[in-house]
Length: 114
Image 1 (spheres, rainbow, N blue to C red):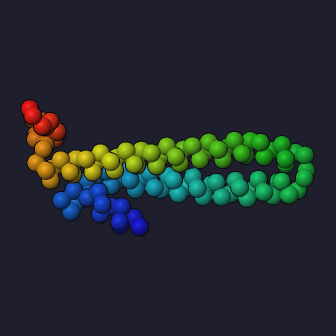
Image 2 (image 1 turned 60 degrees about the vertical axis):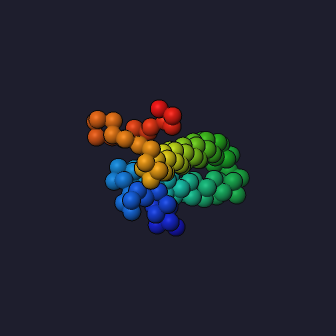
Image 3 (image 1 turned 90 degrees about the vertical axis):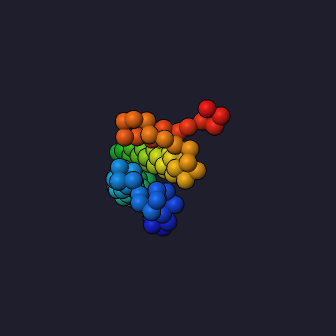
């Protein structure tokens, strides 16, 4: 699946190195958070089944931590989506010939009619 994502956002057959590094870093972060969430859920379930007041009270903090982790995962996926979208836009501009050098080693989109 990861190869499909990479191939769909490749530029001239090459994935931008900066994007690839960010992509891989974010996926590692997401996987670590999801692994931590699995442990949190297991502990929450054990505490719930125990019916011990102290453990049930501890679940409040664990559930907050779980919710924060989920927010972080959503944010990371949002950043990946934005990056992929900008790479796709840049790739489409290059293939349509609607970009030009900005004089600083980067590309600048040329608006039609200008």
